[in-house]
Amino acid sequence: AHMLTKAAGNALLKTLEEPPDHVHFVLATTEPYKLLDTIRSRSQRFDFHPVGAETLAQYLRTICEAEKYETAPDALLAVARHAAGSVRDSLSLLEQVAALGGGQIEDSGVRRALGLAGRDAYLSLSDSISGGDAARALSLVSELAADGVDLRMFLSDAIGFFRGVFLTRYAPNVSEIVDEPGDVLDDWKRAADLLSPAEILRTIDVMSEGLIKLREGREERLMLELALLKLTRPEVASSDPAALAGRLDKLEQKLNRMTAGGTPVADPGGRETASAPAPPPAAKVPANPRTEPSEGDGAEPDGAGSGEAEPAKVLEPTGPTGAIPTSADLERVWPQLVAGVRNDLGARREAMLREAMPSGVEGSTVVLVVPGHLDFHLEQLTGDAGLDSYLTEKAGQLLGAPVRVEFRSAGEPAGSSGPAAPEAAAEEEAEQEIPDKDRLEEAPASGDDPLSLLESELGAQVVDES
Image 1 (tube, rainbow, N blue to C red):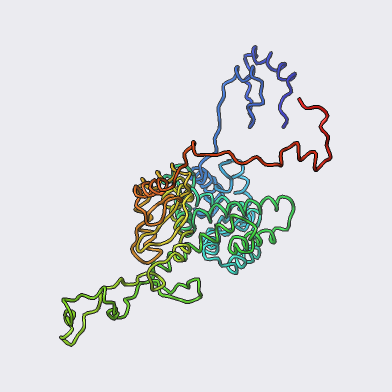
Image 2 (spheres, rainbow, N blue to C red):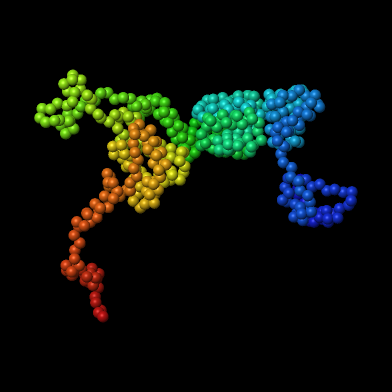
């Protein structure tokens, strides 16, 4: 109904101020802000809130007992949840379900009458998105359509389901901020364990876009199938940055699982190498006289005459490629290292780390350089003990060998230890001879003065010289 006009409100105000003794006015509206301030100031306001699902289901059970309906607890709870806290809507839905079921109110009858999907449909959808199983997702749509499920309502309810999954990831007290039964909360938790936060947010975005298209009159089943295809096969939406982020997130998770499990990992060269470090074969003693111990001419190394030579102590290759980490290995794992800082340490430290770039690997030291003008960033990076500890551990895992991380300025030469670099620069500057100003001589005057150039090139003539 339309709200009262201003003139009608002023006319009613006269009666409200001086009502008859036998009259009580009750104004009911869902838009109280549209009432005149003078009317609201002369009224007692009572706000009615939606009724909880458990309370509403208990009220419906009382009505069913009075009407001799055969009911199931899950069915009444489904009716109460679908009514969204409205007592009037729940009574209408109850009457509709009872009429279609011949006085029997069961969970299957409620879903058939209201066009709802079962709880297992949303868990199956979560499994499909997590595993990238497009065939399973499309089969789910086919089954829902065959059962007479309202696909638009399913898409809307799916958005609500994944909203609960998102709340479960970030709200430890989710049971206190939502009005849902315990079995629904358990389903949210199971789905939250399957999906990453990025996948949950992208699922909500894609489904919201699909729901908007359905409200525009698009074909329901096609729009739902396209939405699920985008979620299970992110590569079909290559122009979507969120889809690309989801694909990278999946690759990182898969790589981490493979590395932790010791399964073969394909390196950039196309070879498969075991991620778990394998002991190297026995190495021969290098024939280098500068590194072999000797006690004079003709001296033999220890154990030479025992019939069994002692192997030389060399650095065992523990990296994923079976060799000591190289600069190429560092370039390969750098994106994973930055992504790990973003996920585990937060966006602030990631922003600082992005100002650095991998320079190379010097022995067991990973060198990261920061542009010379970013002194503040260099100071923050070198002084962050937590970041240094994380990078050391993470880089060691990705490279497959124990390493340490060192930040340097882009202008600092490789291998310098800090204070020695400025001293070397000062000595180099001191070696350059600075000429004495008394020894400077003026350059010989050139014949190409401006006046001569004007006369020779443009044919100018001096008229008056002052």
